[in-house]
Amino acid sequence: MTRKKNPALLLKKYLEKHNPPYHIDQPVDENTGLITVIPAYRENELIFTTLKSLFSCEPPSFRVEVIVVLNTAEDELPDIIKEQKGCAAKIRSLAESAECPQWLSLFTLEAYDLRKKHFGAGLARKTGLDEAIRRFAAIDFPEGEGILTCLDADSPVATNYFTAIEKWFSQPENCGATIYFEHPLEGEDFAPEVFEAITLYELHLRYYLLALKQTGFPYAFHTVGSCMTFRAINYARVGGMPKKQAGEDFYFLQKLIPLGGFGELNTTTVYPSPRPSGRVIFGTGASVKNHLEGTRKQGTTYNPQAFTDLKKFFSHANELFSLPVDQFEEWTYKLTGPLRSFLLNTGFEKELQTIQQNSNNEKSFLTRFFGVFNAFKIIRYLNYAHEHFYARSALFEAAFSTLEATGFDLSEILDEKELLLAFRKMEQSGVMG
Image 1 (spheres, rainbow, N blue to C red):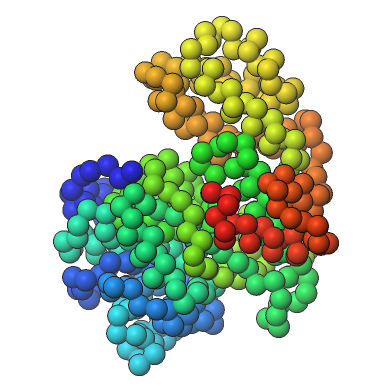
Image 2 (cartoon, rainbow, N blue to C red):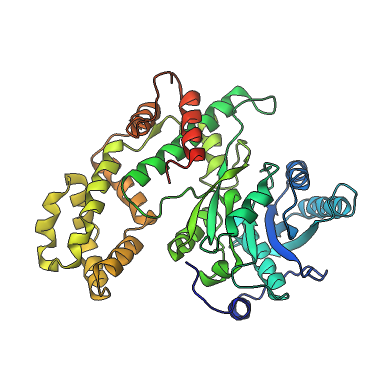
């Protein structure tokens, strides 16, 4: 739940620490309720497809702003800066055209000298989102209003994108969400090999989420940068978007989700591109690129047994609240060898002691426990277990068995694409939540 505090004061405090260096000159309309931020680095074609999908959306009851961040590094080549400025000019022209609906304001934020040390998606998102915070702070809005969404330049949306988000946040307890997504799995825009790669990658993402939910981990959500939405005050509470060159969405959501009121918005859809990319070392584009180049083929994933190990650990976690720390090693014999080895060899005993010292009851203990044994540590454990104990599993078999365990009818599923469609159907139904 959102903690009660004057949102204007909270945003002001955030801006005192994170004063955005790039501003939009036009004043903010008082009826603005949602601002969408889209980083765009050398996206001369795809950004316009995404923008026109936003133009085609059903209008919400409030005004919408879309901020496209045209960014370059401080030592960028002149030709690339020229290219970015040309794209910005086209966007401004589009904003003034009849294509842009009256309920939506389209702006460019041109940031052509960002620090090379931090240059990447994280800093671009932060640049736009911080300016969005400044714009919300310039108008009076009630507690809980002021919605932010993140898209990528290559991520068109369904026509009910804005209205579904508005409906989601009409519930006061909802403070943020990951929005349902589907990568294109066929068509003329990419080679069959690309569609094969994205099918396997998305299946891995959905398998991982379901397996993680089945462990009992309370903060299991997709972490896709183009599919995030949250209240402005919560963005400020967690200190804003990190400047990381990759994985900024993951890091940001690990701070945001534990605030509470976070969920899955499955009534609309974002359609991220399956294109390969070498801009970052991991994520969708990198995974597709590595698959195509053969450097790291898709098709294998974490062994389901590693998640079964976590489920047993989490189901007994409450026992650790009152357990004398000097009995922890003996207590770990309840667990499987791989998880026991991880806990004893990574210093979890000391972390447990700190958790216990700062917990007054079992409920606060479990909150702190999952704050320490969080999504980062889960990935560390999974990598540790697969380095020392488990072989990676074939993706189809692992995903099939995990979904089958939910009682979902898979009798006619024959390949990865059909299995992925079954996962999509389950997520859209909300059964996983």
